[in-house]
Image (cartoon, rainbow, N blue to C red):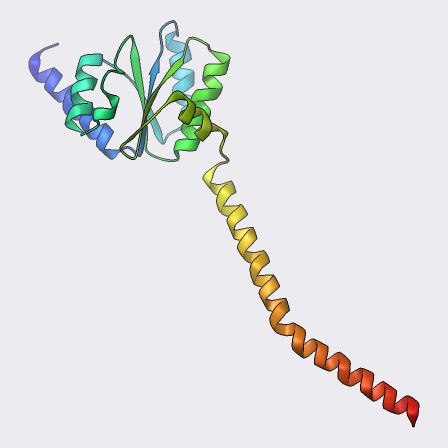
Length: 173
């Protein structure tokens, strides 16, 4: 690889690190080209899975200000650059790794902070963003319903009391 090609590759990787919400490092030793293609498909359009040269990727990470990744570029390395929801990408990587033990998750970075393999697995165990938002909306709707009930309760109680007094008066008369 010529020097200008290396510089272009480092610049591209640096930009990928800067523009991504997260990056997960994996070791892909033993996976076939078809399995890597299946993994890329499983990760979806918002995650770019790229096989990288360790030295160039280490330089790019350093240029992007990600010193937390230092020392993780050993063995055959591929990086999942996550543009969308990190939970979906973590689930895709974890599920693929279950079916294909040759894929090893090394760790990564999210919002500038290092994440371990355990952190990636915890993220994969979370529900998707849409489900969490739906649960939050449901909880807020329930609280609004309770508040509306509390505000209408005194008027409702007064109306029932007046009806009871009217019935009592009619019974007495």
